[in-house]
Structure formats: C-alpha cells, structure tokens
Image (cartoon, rainbow, N blue to C red):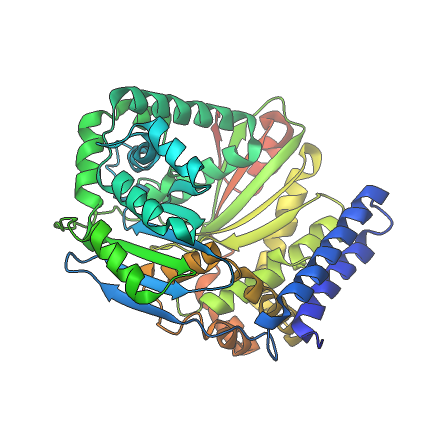
Length: 488
C-alpha cells in the first residue's frame, strides 16, 4: 500500500509534538500519544480505498429534488453499510428569536421529541429504541436540526417519525417547564466553568444587542419570560417545508427514497418565510477589556478576538490554513510561543466561528494569575507579527498536508456525509464544493494568505475577556487600556 505524503505529514506532526514535550510528559501521556498514532495508522489501513493520489476523495454522487411545497431534498447513495442517516435542517435558530426572548429557538427544538399529536415522549423513545435507531435535536445560531439514524430496513419508520416530531409537536406545559428548568440549571452551572463563562462574556462584548451575543441556549431572564404562547407561533412561523432542507444518506436507491419522502412530507403546508431584522454589531476601537471576577481562581481564563467571517467568505480556505498555522496545529505559533518556549500555559488555540453572518475570530488560552497579563501580551504580539509578516511557504505546506490527509477521513459515515452535504446547501456553497474541497486547499498561495490577513485580521481593535481574581490582575490589565469589571 502506498501512503500519501499528506497523511505521513499528519503523523509527523504528532511526532514533532511528542519531541517538544519529551522531557516534560509522563509515561501515561506518552502512551496516549502512541495510541493516537496507532489509531491513525489503523484508520489509514482500513480506509485507504477512499484515498487516491495526493489525498483525493471519491467524487460525491448525489441527487437533488424540490417537492411542490418547497422542501429541498438531497439524497446520497452510500452502500458500504446497511444504514441510513437523515437530517432535516430548518433555517431558523437563535438569531431568529425576539431579542427579549433568548432561548426560545432552543426550547422549541428540545421540545420536538417530547410528544406529538399521536405519540407521547415515552412512545417516541420506545419506537426509536425498538429499531435500534437514534433521534437527536440541535439548535444553533442560524439553524435548527433533527437527525436520525437506523438500519436501512427501518427507513420508512424513522422517516415517518422524523416527519411527525418536526411537524406535529404538542408543546405540553409540563414539558416546557421541564426543559426551561433544565436550560436554566445548565446556564447557572456555567459560573463554575471559567471557559464557558469567558465565552459568554466575550460574545456579549463583541456583539452587543445582536442575537449572536448569547449562546443558543439563551439567558436565564429570557428563558423565564418565554411562554407557550411564544413557542407555538415560533414553530408555526419557521418550521416550514420551504424553509427546510432534508438530506438522506445511506444504503438507498434514489427513486424509492424520493417516493418515501413525498409520502411523509408531501402534505406539509408551505408558508411565508420572514427574515429577522438584526441590529448592527458594535464597532471596536482599541482594546475593549472586561474582567469577570472569580475570587476562587488561581488561573486566569483568557479570551480575545474580533468579528471574523461568514461561512461563504471567498477566503474561507485561506483563513482556515492561516489559523492552523497560527493557533490550531500541534506546532502552531501560539502553542510554540506560549507553551513550549515560555511555559506559561498548557494550551492555546484560535479559530474562526464562521456562520451565516460574520462569526467571531477568537483566541483562547489560560495562565496563572501572576502571569496572565504577560501571557495576554505575548498572544497580542504574535497576532501583530502575523498581521505584519504573514506566513512562510513551509508553514503553509504543512497546513495543507494536514487538511489533505484528514479531510477524506471526515467523509466516512452516512452521518458525516449528510452533515457535509447540508452545510453545502444551507450556506449556498458551489455545487462542486465537496468535490473541489482539496483542490481549493491546494490552490492557496502565500500571497493569498497575506491578502486575507490584511483584509480580516485587526490586532489593534479587539475584545478581551479575563475570568480571574480581580485583585491579582487589575493593575497590570489597566496598562493595556480601560477595564470593565463584571460579576459572573
């Protein structure tokens, strides 16, 4: 078997990381690294048929259809296992809820499987368990989804159940109160998790009154204000066939599958789809700093960044590679500087949360209180260096090798494929987006990265959130700019 160089490079990245830590890690850590490498090698042996040449993937064969009611349908034949994955995405998430009711979209989604006109919550669960299937729900900023999997012989059962929970939920008062209390409890527990706390305050500072300011789960005040009278209209307004995408992937044939979909969803009535009117995002001028006081902390959670990109940004691939170099890869600049060279943290990473609208570019790390501001300054310096100097060809080639080696392995299961297909459709990406994914990565040049950095990165104007014991870091933080103090 001929191994592709990108995959070998990915393995080499792990060896480099082990080498960097060899004098610091315990035997158990070493064995965990060895296990990861062995797992990658095993995956290559099992899945080599999916790789051809320089990390190519098998061309995605799918068919599309639009029902008379406007429901977009995408079907993919994947005959390796006798299973099927179905995902229905509704183009409505937390960004579509009223500003005074954050958490509404989340509640609606969670309540879908808690009872329909024909089945109670227990009946739904028993039906799923009986066929050995799964049914999960999710609410994001821009969309909500229901995903099911089952053996293909149970396709009709799972499809009909999906149709029923999406179209005919009853939203019983008892279940509303149960999920409201569950969400409020989860939010209260965030106060014990400095990473979640930093993330919530970071988004609030970055987005102000915009819906992206709150996570989809909402706020305690918003959840308490939601009644059944808001839940039912939200579902009726947004859960429409002409506002949804249905993806079916598995051991299917197109004709029978489409016939089954028409039977299950054909009488779903279309409606008028309205887009939310969203407030502008605040303009950041200089360093906008907030310290969230947690007197019990000896380590400071650090989160900083600014507005990033949309998912269909023309520089998406370029910035993905740039971010791998800066803050994601095992030898990234952030990790090397802050962890390996300075020993100020055990972790540092960055990322773009690309959404329908512009999501955040963020950097996350942590350090002891006494070295927190030193760590923050180092991170800001590295961001400035990236802005002024760009990346090298060697760094870019390494980043390309990582994605070329790993992307095919993310297209193995029907659920993975369904997710990729629905992303392509939802964000309006080109029809050949998946087929040309690796070509798009290969085509990125150092000059492309420099242009994208110049356009997107803004290290002089960032939001900075520090979750810490205030008295330990306040004076040093003031040297960077005005500081706002907040309680959790």
